[in-house]
Amino acid sequence: MCFLLNAASFFGVILFLYTWKRTPSVQQSSQRISAAIAEGFRYVQGTPQVKSVLIRTGAFSIGASSLLALLPVVCQPHGAQGYGFLLTCFGLGALAGAAVLPRLRVQYSVDGLVAGATIVFAMMTFAAGQVHIFEWLCLVLFTAGAAWIGILACFNVVAQTMCPSWMRARALSMYLLVLQGGMAIGSALWGAVAARQGVPEALAWSALAMVVGLSTIRRHRLTAAELEMAPAVVRD
Image (tube, rainbow, N blue to C red; front, side, top):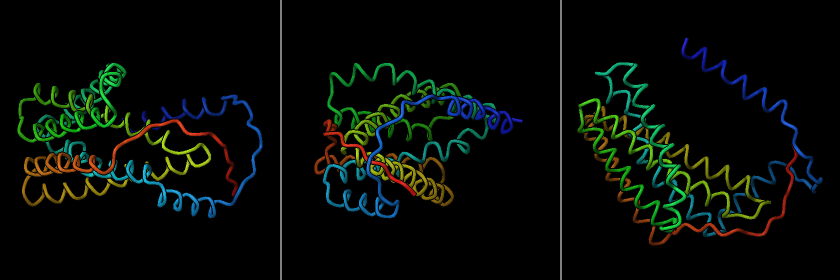
C-alpha cells in the first residue's frame, strides 16, 4: 500500500507538467546528441573549475552515502515506523538547514560553508553508529539533514554557475552522474565494510573518509561566478 500511494502521487507531477504553459524560446542552431556529448566531455576535460566541482562532489558523496545506506540496519530494533520517523527527522533537518542557509552564506564563503557542514555531517555519521537511544538518533538525523542540505545546496549552485548556458545542461548531467555514482559506489563499499567489520566501524570509516576528502579544498576550490549566457539546442 505504501508503494502504491507513492506511485499515485506522481500523477500530480504529471498533471502539472502537462498543463504547464511555457513561453516558447527562440529557435537556436542544433547538433546531434552524440556530438553534443563528446563536446561536453571535451569541455569538462579542459576546464579546471568544472573538474574541481566534480572532484569535490565525488569526494563527499562516496563517504556520505554510508549514513542513508546503513540507516535501515541502524534502526532495525525500532522497526519500519522508527525508520520512517528517522527519515522524517532527516527531512525536517534539511528544511531547517535551508531556512538558515542564506544567513550562513552571507557570513561564510562557499568553501568554508561546505567544509563546516561536511565536518558536522561526518560527526553525525560517526554518532549514528554509536547512539542506540531512539530519541538521540532522531537528533543525530535532524542535524545530519541540516548539514546535508547545506552541502548539496552549495554544490548545486556552483554546478549551475560554473559553465556558460550553452554547456550548462551537459555540465549538470556530469555533476549528477558523479553525485549519484559516488552514492552508489559508496553504498556498496560501506555495505561490504559493515558486513565484514560491523555497522559502527563502517560508519566510522566513512566519517573519516569525508574528513580526509576535505584535503581536496587546497587544490580544488569552489567558484560560483556568473558567466556569459549563450543558449544552445540539442536534437535527436
